[in-house]
Length: 169
Image 1: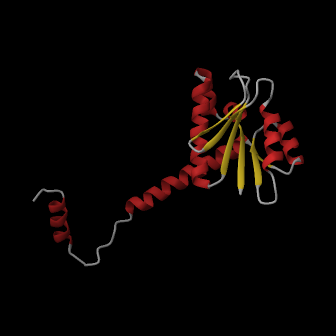
Image 2 (image 1 turned 135 degrees about the horizontal axis):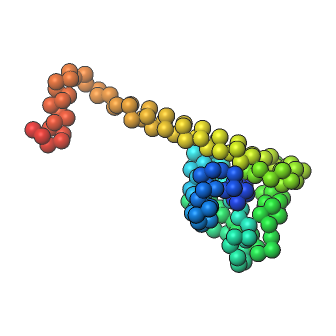
Image 3 (image 1 turned 120 degrees about the horizontal axis):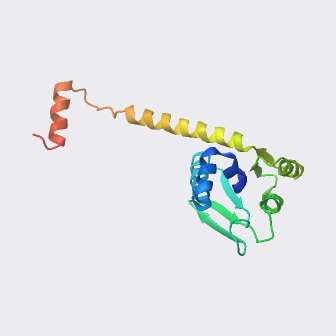
């Protein structure tokens, strides 16, 4: 199993689209990141966890699932980095490979020491763009893939049947 742990505010600060949303409303930036990671999870099949510091959201630690993505808000005095390190210790094993999406160099060094791998914010953004392209290509293939009739009919008859189907005749 592959698990992607995302340092939420680090990614928001690194991606232009999310950075612009953050300037207006941090909640919108968080929601958009969650939506994007839900698409990533649906396409890749990997488990995705997003960790946000309590810096922007005061209160007790909380964990929720949104679009099947696990969203974790740290405790008030706990950083996202500390929470991510605890998560890695908890979920990393022989059958589970953990990737951490962050551009925080100090955090990358720490996670390497725990056996996790890193994806920089830029690498994750490129991977998201590739996934989006693959989805669009797949949609186009399915759009252009017309079901074949078992009986060969000429175009004139097919057009008449289509008009009948639509109730035009």
